[in-house]
Image (cartoon, rainbow, N blue to C red; front, side, top):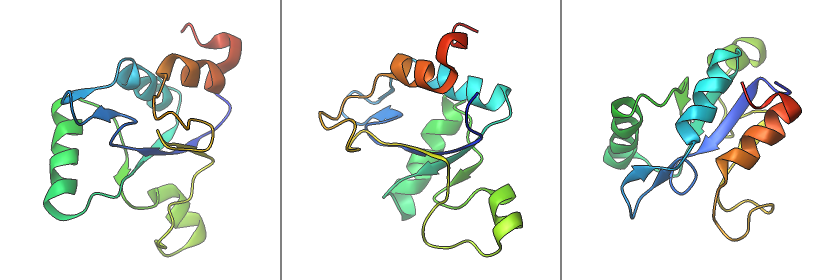
Amino acid sequence: MKYKYYAIDFDGTIYDRHLKTILPNAKKVLDKIKKYGGEIAIWSCRTGKDAKEARNILDKESVPYDTFNETLPSVRKEWGENGRKIWAEVYIDDLSIHNRKGNVDWNKIEKWIWGDQSND
């Protein structure tokens, strides 16, 4: 695995709000990140009851994550306070500049993270 710290958007990246389902292979890739020692911060615009709903969906579907809308504990320990911006080495978002069409392909993400070792 190339990186340890991941900030991952929820709506449209992990979860399809219209279909009310976790996107194909998202859980598999996030499980693999955790298996190899990665840390995951869910990075969402959701707040209040909407954030609670998102956490409930993640928990119900057993999608792993370390924090929701806050910096990872190990990063906070090293750098201090929890600032407004979530720090990570990798940010995965359905509306990133590299993904302007808003469709996330978790198979491509897995291949990018692990290269030729993605078939684990």
